[in-house]
Length: 491
Image (cartoon, rainbow, N blue to C red):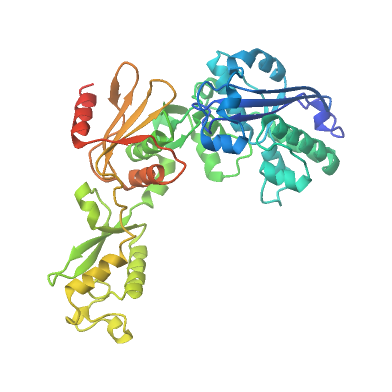
């Protein structure tokens, strides 16, 4: 049903729609886990604001320091505030029958949908995203964040990152569009953005409705149950719907969607579990639309070796399965052998290493760098192995596998706010154990064979070493590791 069907093209869309302009502030970015701490709503009828709603919301948990810094809302401010359960009835009446308007609408809509879901209310609404509207109307502009819109249109905002103030910015933006954009063009843009997501003809709406609003992995299947594509998201349903959105401009995406016959989802308790599960599932199922990225990932490694004259040298070979004891010999991992050779030539020149000892040059006699003064004569026995090897180690100090930053194994846990979650036992970047647990017990989650996997290594370094990821972990002893493995394997 087109809710603008009765609106003439010379009218203004804001006069033809009932709008609920919404902004929420939250404890984080995951709708399935984090909670709302403030809601602001402006209700618009006939182009006029007819109602306002604004309240802090007790999330029934502490809020992180960076959220306090961003919003100015403190844990003390939330003490005594109503819970979402306290405001649900008033809020659902305010939103009912309105187009849900927000900036990056899926964020705000996802949080409210999850909060209502916890209260047993199945909330749904047509959404109008003002960020997408800005992109559609002003494609020449590079930025469409709320701060950019504030600057571009000269809108004042007294308290940025406070719910009602940000909602007021959106209303002023919509109002200014009536003056600056032709009415028929504005109407057309809003019509397009309000179109219901078009599902592939073979996919029932109930299939999409059954997908969870939480982190995890999803798999598209084609005819005869063939896996087509594996993806991951912090919000599975939202990500799947994005594949099917009517404004998709990718031919590959359209071809994929036309072949989908079924969708399966696997929940995880957080982003780390989703990333690791996606990596494993792609390798296990080898789906058609992930194969190209997999085929490009025949990686090569540069491995440290010792010549018979005791000089350190290198070998370039395909990256295979490595045990923890092999990692100290890895000097770099590259997409192609050509990239690896280019790196070796560059390193040799910068650190005055011998290209002959490094296997970059063949033949008898001294290397080409001797005449250029870039080799100290190791290839002719004029530099000792000890001196050469010290320089070699300095040259490759930063290019190999990162040193394991812990004294022993660690336990990483991700929980979804209840007793359920996943646990990952990791040592020397290798997965030793992986389990799902709940209040009644545990079961195995991902394969964990104590070997080095480059994809898992990249995922783990991102979560363990980069600030802001906030991975919950604790070091454990090897004795504790063995006890945990025995406990979980017996489950």
